[in-house]
Image (cartoon, rainbow, N blue to C red; front, side, top):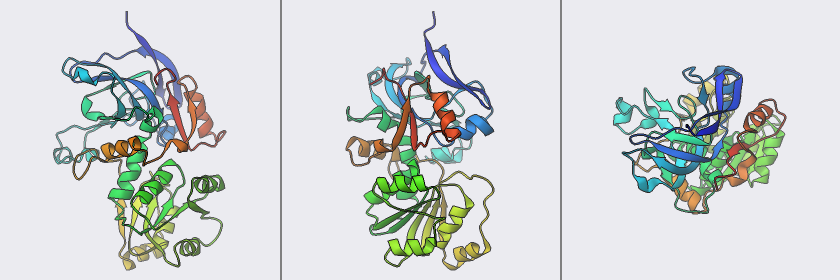
Amino acid sequence: MEKMMKAARMHRIGEFSVEEVPVPVPHGEEVLVRIGACGVCGSDLPRIYTTGTSKQKYPLTLGHEFSGTVVAVGEQADPALIGKRGTFFPLIPCRKCDPCLSGNYAMCEDYDYLGSRRDGGFADYCLIPSAWHMVISNNPHTTFEELAMAEPACVAQHAMLRRSNIYAGANVLVFGAGPIGIMAARWAQIAGAGHILMVDVLDEKVAFAKAHGFAAVNSRSGDLEQAVRAAFDGKLADVAFEGTGFGSALNNAIDCVRPFATVVMVGNPAGDTTIGKVQHSKILRKELTINGIWNSHFSNLPINEWRYTVDMLDKGIFRCADLISHTTDLDGLPGLIDDVKNHRVNACKVLYVDPENK
């Protein structure tokens, strides 16, 4: 008789519910993970309510920001993995295209993805293609909740530490005071940033950033460039992190950086993005570097960003648990996501947490 489990699955756009499905059985190099925690990404909301899954594949278990414990392995996998705790890189590369052959798996031309193209972590268990995806935690006191935050933390790290040209003493401007924005600001602190200013259009997010130790302003409350100069001793920003996906924030970022600065674009576009004529001219006149960010990079050169993030979590140097505003068991997940979507709750980071997997 098949062993059954609960999973939060999509059957079509707008239909997301918890149901019972068979527990996967690992074969070959596959690894079966008992989920400890799984985060709700900002991309999950449009996936559930408007756009659907990447390849319109249904039914599908969502959730790509997850952690857990290995409970079973296939016949070709190392049985010593059983009992190991960690987090999991969700992208499944083809390993055949030029980006894959050069180790740039995030740029894979024909990838699969746990939680958006293949069953993910909003479940009791998740089947992982191989141990290659796993980053083991070496500190038993690092919680599953913290390990589930590794995926967005890696995105923030890739943007701020790898693509922004940050340096010790740099003045850093962060647009978007959500979880990735605050984590990007924390990576900037670790890198030795001189001053950091966070920007949002919602007073509650400005207040949240301030409560977590950052200077923050509402860009709609006055002259933003003046506020930036006030925060940066009369100077403009050396680095701008655009995490909202809105064209207005991108234009503001271009206005508020110095010549030869770097703007990193992280937020998924909310719609068509228009750069104003004045801002277009400023890109040219200031000779700005504008870097796009896609995901995080899971390769060993120059470093494995995921391994570094988990190490920093294990050592207590990088903090993220305080950004988790709401948790729920699996049965409560669809309702909580609907509450977030309809603004019935003010959430920073929402996690599904398995109360039985500690």
